[in-house]
Image (cartoon, rainbow, N blue to C red; front, side, top):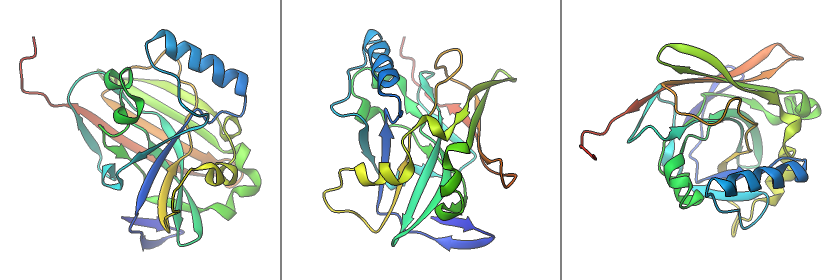
Length: 222
């Protein structure tokens, strides 16, 4: 995939992609969230944090993705992209099939494309103020846009700690790690459009992501 780093194009042939879940620093809050999901029929994870492998082919720079039904949704996440020992910060959306999530979280992570942004920052340029990075997302439903998520990176485990926790059998040289999301406002819901941002307030710069969600199912399932 061709990324842009400090104004220069860089091709990174990703070997692996991993999604981290339940990455909150407050373990009591994480446990409470797990209990809430259990009430919805979603099984608790085997480990906390939990890690799910997906194919790098699911990652996309496209401005739209296609899904098969209305029970899908995105969530803004900071990415760590590793290329031969160098680490970079990016933005992505862990767009997930919520219907399948109730049956198998790991499978649900593989069923939707994962939109990501082109631009990356060297991790070293934000590492000393990581907790201050601001995450936000908006969703649009029938043309009405509303704030969906907002919070700080301090909510979740720090990137260097999380990178060491990934249970790789053999650590690849080039991979991407989704580092976890922040709570949504008003409950998880499907939207026609998703807009996300990660903002470095100290430098006045942002990583941005926007995509439309198209429901494409030509079969009568009634």
